Every structure is written in structure tokens, then in C-alpha cells.
Amino acid sequence: MDHDELYPIAILIDELKSDDISLRLNAIHRISTIALALGPQRAREELIPFLQESLDDEDEVLLALADELGRGLEDQLGGKEYAYMLLGPLENLAAVEETLVREKATESMCKICTVLVPPQHEEYFVPLLKRLSSGEWFTSRTSASALYAPVYPHVSEGVKADLRKGFQQLGADDTPMVRRAAAKHLGPFTKTLAKEHVVSDAIPVYRRLASDDQDSVRLLTVQDLITIAQLLNHAEVKDQLLPSIRQSVGDKSWRVRYMVANHFVELAEAVGKEIVQDEMVGAYVQLLKDNEAEVRTAAAGQLPGFCKLLEPEVILTRILPCVRDLSTDTSQHVRAALGKEISGLAPLLGKEATIEQLLPLFLLLLKDEFPDVRLNIISKLEQVNAVIGIDLLSQSLLPAIVELAEDKQWRVRQAIIEYIPLLATQLGVQFFNDQLSNLCMQWLGDTVFSIREAAIINLKKLTEVFGVEWAKTTIVPKVLAMGNHPNYLFRMTTIFAITTLAPVLNLEVTRDLVLTTVVQLVGDPIPNIRFNVAKALEVISENLASSAEGRDIIRTRILPQLESLRNDNDADVRYFAMRALDKAAARQ
Image 1 (cartoon, helix red, strand yellow):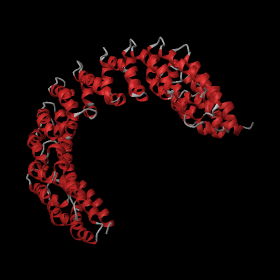
Image 2: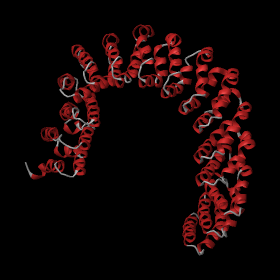
Image 3: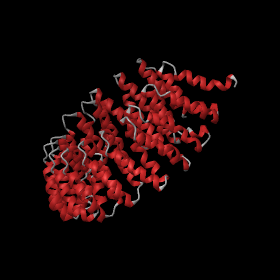
Image 4: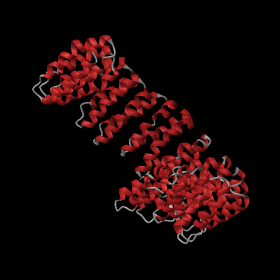
């Protein structure tokens, strides 16, 4: 064997033994290239055994190795029939102490399982799975639970029975970490089972885990409950799962109840209409009235989704009283979650019930002391507007918007500015002009720069919503009028606004209105304004250059001003004027 043939593996060995972790990581990331250089036979005979012995390293290196082994390395070993050789190093990685490494190793093994040639599942993967499942250390048993689902469909009936038994043992393991992993992976494994085995094997495992003394195990069974309910018919759900549903909803740990509340719509959809009416409404009311704010918050988040499964009279008699209580909840997070979702009830209840029952709650939340509650309400107005109409909505809405617009917290003012284009789209141009136009101009004079900047971007978005003609009559004259203000900050805001608005304005507005103000500001005594004028002229010339008339305007009105600024006594002004001149000249 000559020196050239030995070189790749020698380099890899040297780098993997280096004291420098970055070199070792580099070597791992190049394994695929090195395997290619070695050729399939030497990669199988030398590289894989070497990797199997190189597992005493930093977690970062092992994580990279676990990842690389699942990235199609079997192609460099000679094809799919040799993919099983990668399972050796991965089996060792699946038993290490670091969770991230184990998870990545099991992920890579799952990928390899899908490319194995059929007899190899039973020949190589199942024995590996049994070794991990009966490992002395809990780490290997924890990893094993993730591997049952991918291999189960590919094996014979006798082996399937062994696998079901093996998973049952993991679900009854002495170590909570293993039971937690079993609870996490029971759902995916159950999906691979035949219907009779769901009832005979999966449900007993689920029941044992759902009654575990550790809440960290029980909370993971909520997702399993949903998966099993989706696989059974409604009569079987009632027969097999109803006590478990009641048990989870009333669990002594708030973390379990939180998980139920967080996935309540999924669960309700899986169990069928009859159980929803008989059991789930009561369960949902119980969660909405829970002692823990986190559970009430999660339950409030499911409000419109669950109510879609109910008749309007059930919503009014059973759910709405709880919603009223939540609107005055002591926790601001509960009220914020409610504010985000309550508007979803309007289409379900219809106009009359919305006006009578929901609007008072709406107004209450719009006056909430916590800004997020008010903002969440305003961000979801479209659904309510569609049901009750703009007149009623605007009467209640406007005072809240004005209040938020003048909030002492500048971040609240900024948040409401960002919602204005959405409101404008929902409420229409007439309402905007009458009620919100002055507010938008008021923000341009705010003491906080971030607010002035957000207000300018807001004007651009509004122009995109309502069109250039609207901007020409409504906002452009007001923006340009600020160019004559004695305070230089207002003049600066004008030039910033012109620079931002220029791309959405047409040639007529730019020629007749905008350029007059920009030319006037060329002689401004403040250098900051003059160099921003140069920047504005650069943007304007870029937008005008696409037409012959625009190029003529650049030549007659913009270039002379930039020439004048090029001789300015301020270095920054000269620099930006030169840059704008070069770009404008290039477009001629």
C-alpha cells in the first residue's frame, strides 16, 4: 500500500488525536470526504472501526460525529446494503451521558433504519435495539424508546410481538428518565401498531405512564392520549379513554393540566361530538376556572378553536360566564391571552349576541391597564368588524387607540404605530381620514427617535394601502410643511420621510411637491440636514431614472443641487453629495 493511499486516514487520525478541539471537529465534518478518498472497502474496513474506537472525546465532537453518521455516509461505504455498519458507532453514542449527543445518535439511527435492506432490520437493528433496551445504564434505555417506531413496520409478526413487549418494559422502568422517554415516544410507536394492538398493548402502557408518580412523565402522556384517541373510533374512546381524560383534566400537578389545556382543541377533535358535549365542555370550564394562572392562560388560548365544536347556545350558557370572569382575571397574562382570542367568538355567536354579550367585554379589555391586553384586542379587530360593522366598532375603538397612542411608555406607542396599517386596511380610508390621520402626523413630532422612525415607515405602508393619490392630498403636504419648522429635528424628520416615501410616490408628486421642499433644504444651516438631503436626492434620482421625463428632472433639478452640495464646507455633506452625483450621473 503506497503512501498516497494511507494519507487520508493518517490525516484524520492525526486531527482526531489533536489537542485542538476545532481541528478534531473539522476532521469529523470531513468524514464523508475522507471516506470518498479511501474508497468503499477501506472506508468499511478502516474508517468505521477507527470511529468506533474514537468515542472518548468532548461532547461537542461526539455530537458532530452523531450528526455526520446520519448524513448519507452509507453511499461512501458502497451503498444501502452497508448502511448497517454505521449502527456500531451510533449504538455507543446512544449510551453516552450527554442528552444532546444521545438524541442526535437516535435521530441518525432512525434515518439509517429507513435505508436498510429488509433482512437487515431483524439481523442488525433489532438486536441493537434489544441491547439498548436492556442496557445497564439508564442512558441506553432512554435512547431505545425512540427506535421502536421506525423499525416496527419492517419486521415479522413474531419480532413485532417482542418489540411491543420490550416497549412495555421501558414504560415500567424503575428510572423516571426512561419512563419519560417512553411517554415521549409512545405516540409515534402507537401509530405503527395494528388497531387490536393499540387496545391490547399501547393503552395499558399509556395508563401506567398517565398514573406515574412523576408529573414530568404524566405531562408527556397528554400527546399520547390525543394520538390514541385519533386511532380509535368514538365508541372505543368512550369505553377506553374517558376515565383517563377526566384524570388528566383534574391532575394534581398544574403542569399536567397546563398540557391538557394547551392541546385541548386537538383532544376535543379526536374524541368526537358526543363526548365533547357530555364531557369536554365541563372539562374546559374546569380548566378556565383553574387555580393556576398558567393553566387559565393556556385554556384561554384554545377558546375559538374549542367553541367551533359547540352550538352557539352552549357557548352562551356555559363558556361565556367563564370568559367574563377571565376578562377581570387577576393575572395580566390571562387577560392578554383572552384579548388575543375573544374576537374569534364573534363569527360563532353572530351580530346580535356579539353586540349584547361580547362588546361589553371588548370595551372592558380595551380599557385594561396592561398595554398587551389592549394591543391584542386591536390586532384582531377584523373578525369583529365583519360581524358588527364599523360604526359600532369605531365608537368603542377610537378612545382606546388614542390612549395607547399617547401612552407614556414609548414601546407601547411604537407597537400601536405598527398596527395602524392593519387597522387602516380593516377600517377603510374614510374612517382613517376622519379619526386617525392627525394621530399619525402627531407621531412625526414625538420626542423619541424610534417613534418618529416608526411613524415614517407607517406613512409608507399607508401609502401602499390607500394609494399615491390619497398620499398626495392627505399626508405629503403635512410632511412637507414640517420642512419650514424652526426646530431642526422636525426638518430632519421631513427629509427622512421624503427618503422613505420616495419609492412609493409617482413622478408627478415628486416633481410638483417633494423636490421643491428638498431643494429648499439644500441651504439649511445644519450639516446633518444637508447630508441627508444628498441621500434623499440619491434615492429620488434612483426612482426617476426609469423614464425619459424623470431623467430630464434629474439633469435640470437634481444634479445642480448635488453640485452645490459637493462644494459644501462639511466633509460628510461633500462625501454624500459625491456619492449621489456618481450614481445619478451613471443613470443618465
